[in-house]
Amino acid sequence: QVQLVESGGGLVQAGGSLRLSCVASGRTFSSYAMGWFRQAPGKEREFVAGISRGGFTTYYDDSVKGRFTVSRDNAKTTVYLQMNDLKPEDTAVYHCAASKVQLTIIVLRTAREYDTWGQGTQVTVSS
Image (cartoon, rainbow, N blue to C red):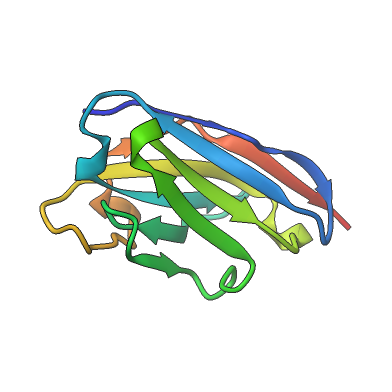
């Protein structure tokens, strides 16, 4: 089982950019599909982006498509979320998540499919 630690959140003006990082402990990182979720106050946790074990398959929620990019570096056991053209509605706590999978191309899109979560990092976008 990996442990996940996110970083890179902060306060940014609308239109700005941030890059979130999620570092995983353990030596089997390449066996895990990874995802990013976010939760705003009073709202349900929602899927943002996911990436397959090898990094060749990605999937995005429509609300971030074209603005956010998920990537991973298996050698560094890290998954990234590059966020561009940020909007006030992107304000939330962002969590990374992991789940061990067999298929190398699979991307997991729902919270219940992930079994390991980081503590989250706050992203605040001012208008």
